[in-house]
Image (cartoon, rainbow, N blue to C red; front, side):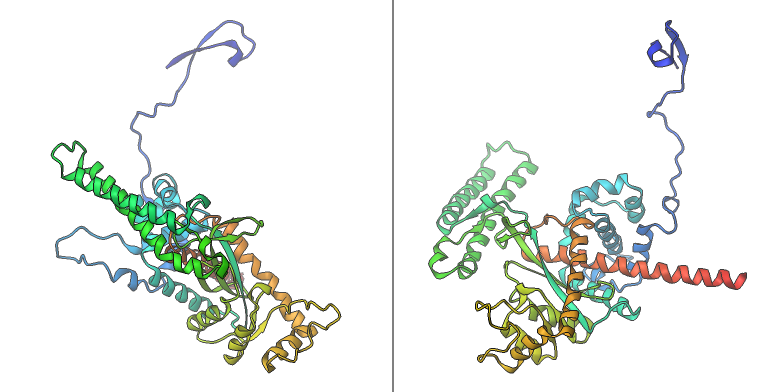
Length: 443
């Protein structure tokens, strides 16, 4: 096809020239290689995630499927596809179901994982939060695999909290009278929508009608949930401030917390237990209180359930230090290493037992004052690595789901992804070492 362009585009020739060019014609049908297996190199991370997921017992994810061969019903989507899809996405810092829905038709790795199976946004989004118990068990399985590979050092572990912004704005927090008034208005609106749907003059389409009814119903449900959360919000306040308690009408379980930058925002408190040899996450939970003081004992017990044994040493920062918790863990055979608070009397030795101390607390104070205790506790600084990776590498700056249990599902996905990448790195090293040995034998 000929085209006339000016001399400014072709050089110093001042006279226009008609050039014959082969131009892009994207309306033309051309042969394109379509074998999905050829889309990715053999060592691509998407392939490796697919392979290690295949080593795990996924029967709990298959149990709810009722469609079987020889009986009516459309085939169900293989859960392995959705598991691998979310794990790969999180490994790439993608946490949005809508973004995954775009990538599954535009990005070769996501296309390969889907393997020609059609998905949609709702299927991808719902799978992220519909399997809390199954995800919890999957995390335990991955830890067991890592332990069998010698990658988990159970004796010395640590714990850290991470405040993650909730999917709610500060303006959504309301006091009880405002929520009650809003609920009354929402119920009135719901009644209006229902009556309109019964009227013969209703000209809305079925889709419009269903959407408006669902929106009105969900608004009522959110306000009801917010009022149900009000007693817990009041209990967290000082007696004189309980009338000022506020709850979000968007995410009732979210709480305003002090963030790492010193600001206050709606958030959830993510808790991770971490072993220190390879930074395997051995426990994961989400709470909606900004304080860490009550989180130590539950996390230690969770780690015991996942690994089969209590750690000998549990390292925490000052936010976790609570004397009753130290005593409770000592009864389980766990020695806590956490900083002793500075005494108000600067002349007093902070590591010297107080007259009111129990023998366990006195031993903790003295332990933290020894060189050995300080050397052990120094390892705790390493715990920041998994949290930093969760934020920077896995894209966890703000959660996109609402409700503590759904947020916990996201935390489990992150923990599983983190541990799976450690497992993949180990398997790569094993394969590389075996290849090197084979090469030496040939030489």
